[in-house]
Length: 112
Image (cartoon, rainbow, N blue to C red; front, top):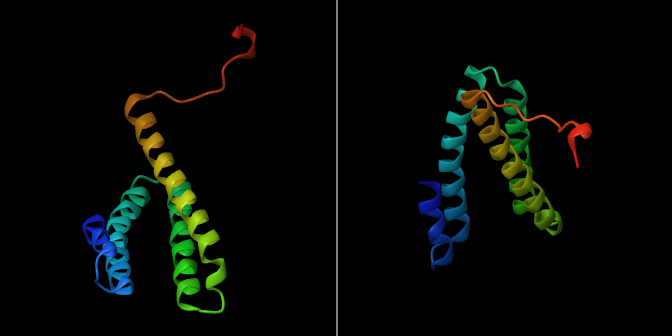
């Protein structure tokens, strides 16, 4: 739903209303993710997700504070990167649990 609302960013509708609606639906999806992480006992991923929520709050603070909006592009990039890393880590964890394959460093003796 958040992605569907995001398409309206490029129309004549008010940018602030659309971003707030998309954020609301995104928060609903993230709540389900947090519940799953907590129930599975994946505390590190849970806390990393909380870091993402804090970064989103910082983004909103910078966006609505006109004196600090200069820092918004940098914080947005950091937030986007940490969110992608978080999602990739969740996917890797699910893969490792389902397949029983755990990634390890290769033995240097068998290289070459």
